[in-house]
Length: 142
Image 1 (tube, rainbow, N blue to C red):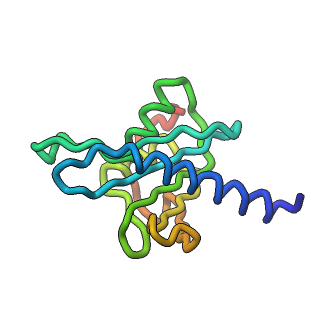
Image 2: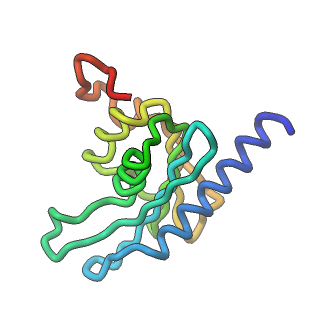
């Protein structure tokens, strides 16, 4: 299979996993359900969904939940992250998510899609989302 087909099928698989994760979001206050699916360098998909608190500052984004699950399962290398929500153009990661992605998944490709139009996918690099990221001086966390 040509690399472009592999990449295309991998993207579709990751978007589907993010859509499935979105269905498990806990968003009783905003009703804004977000799903994320993180792809490890070995092809494993780890998903997450946003979880809200009535105290919005305690809410955790789908991207961070997927990343935290992956990290605590011992995964350290990531190639892609898909994020879906019902918003035109797809949901963009917040600043906290962008910072954590720059630290733990700097080489990942980020795909965002509107859950109602999941075949229209925008693509970003972590560097595009957070140029000049604040990083550790030792850069040996991964």
